[in-house]
Length: 261
Image (cartoon, rainbow, N blue to C red):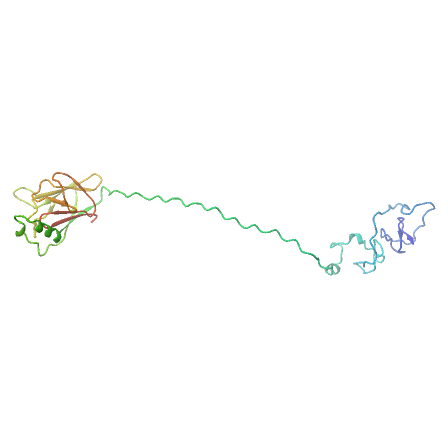
């Protein structure tokens, strides 16, 4: 058995099995000098791996810590020291691989309640909105007058033809009646145009405009009365009108007020 310059006992005669130093002509131990203390080298501690393993660099059978042919240090064996060809031939890892951490399911964003939609309140008719009076002959109203009877009802005939007429309500007061030279009445809605309704008084009713743009009707004292939506109104009392309300007067005349032209 050879001794390296550092004092290590080596089974190999060319390179030290412990430190890998070239042995060459190694000096003999002095008498009484303990192995591992010769020269200036320090003793290496630790168990030497079992032999029978091949050197990954030159293939020589391992007999100690260092390869006897190329001096490869078996304690440094790892992916960073192995030859690429040897590293690629390493046996694959066995056993189950650790499972990757389970991905967290995305949390749904909280549902924000939709803002409540404000429902606009119905607007009152604008003060400048236009209103129109539509005048026509109403056969059903005429039949109800005839059914009620009266001293002059039988002598009044329903007109064969009565075209519809439209009057735009302007100003703050619109009179309904028949034109009269003798009394000086010239109503804005003149019903004396043929076919004239004999049951309409010269000043039968008056339409009055309110500050908010709506209209009302007043019967100042007609001979045959004024009916709004099927009910006779008291004389001298203003009755509010809505869009589409009907006013009946005379023997067959219907006057319907509508908002707009």
